Length: 159
Image (cartoon, rainbow, N blue to C red):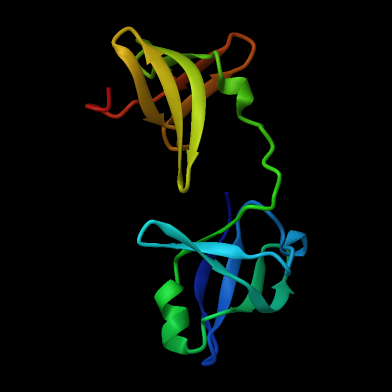
């Protein structure tokens, strides 16, 4: 399942919401397919009842089950997921890269990545075993595809 948007805020008094799209454009949305919002760790499906694009990255929408301002406020800030987009394996190039800490110390080799909703992580083979390292833009120092080296600021205590 791919994160596609975030509920930015409620819109109107009848349960409308303002969506901010992060990985797709509003025109790419299939209005016949469900989108999902996680509640208590489980994906709950919602269908669009009304959908009006606003520019290239936002839309005003109404979804099933959200009928009031209180309902819309309850999901404000929630991530919206869809499972019908073909995910491009654009991060496959990371597999096999050497991971180094910003101080130059060798951490290990990236063996895979895992797209945990809202938290992309790398599986890294280290001398002490396999570890899961968050792959966040704030931690990345550099990626050199020519040398196959990924340098990150690894938080103290993570390894």
